[in-house]
Length: 469
Image 1 (cartoon, rainbow, N blue to C red):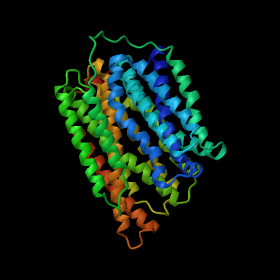
Image 2 (cartoon, rainbow, N blue to C red):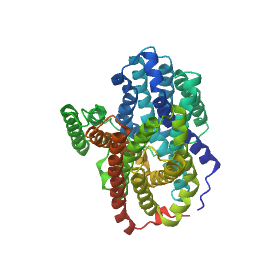
Image 3 (cartoon, rainbow, N blue to C red):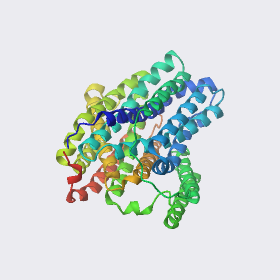
Image 4 (cartoon, rainbow, N blue to C red):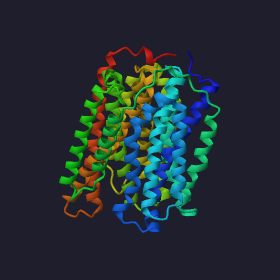
């Protein structure tokens, strides 16, 4: 079987990738616009971070529910519903007159995204044949996420400076409606007929509560470069609630997250490696943004500085399926994590005098290629051995791991950086800031090496299913 995707599946792929692009772009445009929003709505720093946190909280909380719903009531239907919620919430956010209004709209946008992303992933995995075609489709899906981040940084800077921050929210409305209209012409693979299943209400309540408390704890500010007692207590409480969720799922008649899925080695390893990869990559983007700000870059210039990262991810869509077909997803995963580790270690030597073209640009290009390749291998591995009627919940699980990895990794590495900076002779100096970044990036590189180590045992397993022509 070749890697050419049929016209019908290509339309589906374009639409689900546009949905991914839209939601990732929205996140980065809002981040760029935070200073303008703060000034317009007279928000203090503590309230301002909730514009981001509210979205992250609901997104993480509803991913498993979104994945399970797509398996039970239809992937296309759930994707359409998620996009509609996302667009309506964006419209409401554009008209926000006060911080509470805006934060509430962002929380609802997170619910829409949590419904959309697992449904989009399962549409790809259930509609496009396994092997080269599916590998290529997931490579494009992952690259459009990176492209959305890069585009959002630039679009956010341009629109905020020219039309104002509200235009960023209004932009989502026609784009979301266009994707929804396009989905009308997409035919979904028929779902297997099932007996009516009861809703796992205790499991839904437990996972919502546990992830909410956990992510809320991660978002709590540090005190003098270390985790406060309240933050640690909140994290422990969230972890305990999630342990309770596992026990609920063990005995539930129709579990929200069937625990037997975690007997599938490829799903477990893919999720853990994805957790680690998003841990250091989210922190790397955060530190790079602060570094560019210290260099005096404007919001637009910062967006342009990140552009090679996104463009090289898009380029990876052309080469990742080829290398996956030749060498297999596991080898690709190992090489990508090795490149990620080397990239983190290289950036840990940056200084205020480092030239962008000679020092930053080559690493951004390599990291764009490696993260896109790694993401593709992770997604392919997470659904490879899962029954087709459970691809939605598998997508919800992997995205939950990625989201929690990004939140936890950023919290841990930012705390490490803050602690090192606070211990310097002059904590307010750029040298102290860079010292903190250096240490955190070295730890991030160690995360990548650990991910590589976890991928190594898989090299002994048969890779024929991932090498189909």
